[in-house]
Length: 439
Image (tube, rainbow, N blue to C red):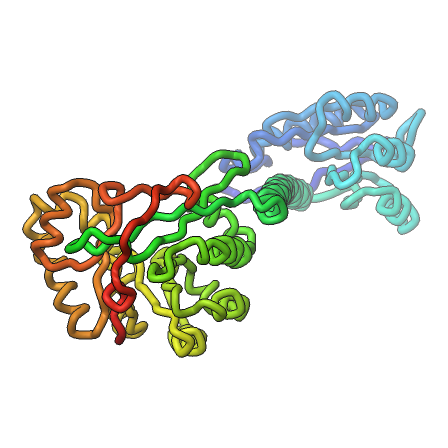
């Protein structure tokens, strides 16, 4: 059986030498855990330095640098940046405590460079002075080989953990810095977007255009849908402006502004023509809407847009009560897409159901679309709601809708959205009762 020499002591003579170490007393190399480690050995006795170098390399230390002049310690430390320093205490020119004091000046704050003091001075005073000066461990000569190697491994393992923690903290700090910068950037962008919408409101940079809603059987205009157009920069679609306003908490303000601007034109419409305005469910709950619409509620249709879900039907219906009692009608916009489901329609009990443009497009050539439109006409008749088709763009679509008994419609084929000042005289209008039948 192989003899175990792990308890072999390395003795120091009167001159501080460690004594002889044979190859048979050294353990096998480690598993490579410290292959990248750099160790600096500082001892005025060259034999001690040589023996420690051999001992450390046999356990897998990647690089061992030995010096015998303690005055070179700081310079060598700065050159090689060791992971561990083995330091003698009593040396000519500069003792170990003085070396520790010099190292404390050059080692960066927050760094962990462990120093293991190896000395023949076993006094308590020597140990206290060394540890007070910054040494992390203290071993007296003669010492056991296993003990020294264990201390070295522990200190290198602690150094490795410290470096890993430093890297982790640096990564966290970098990630935090990126997060903070991102949040600051998003906050700046939010403020810029909010200021942009705020300028639209302050500068009244919204004009209203009106698209006719036509009785498909008689071709008479029975209503006008008010649509917002923006004169502010950047130039973009109205839905993008409204989406940005909603994103910065000004969606309701912008919608109410558009509604007010539309209602302001109501007296310019023939007396038997109604005005249709669009609002989101959130805006429909705002009491300011009632104040805007109450005076002429009998001539207003409130279109509830499908761009957001309704999660408070009871509150929504309660908010409609006063205006409906005053004569206002409610329309469900874009039926057949988005949130305008049949359940949604049933819960709102609208006066008008508007068929989505995607349902109307190419309806003249698509039997499935025709069947759905016909079913919605029957459904509307059963619940007491009239049907209006949106997005009619061809004569073929118009004829198909007439054949399917869709009573009302709008679209470029019937009339584009225009300012009232640009519109030609409307001519004879439908009877208001015919245009918007009572429930």
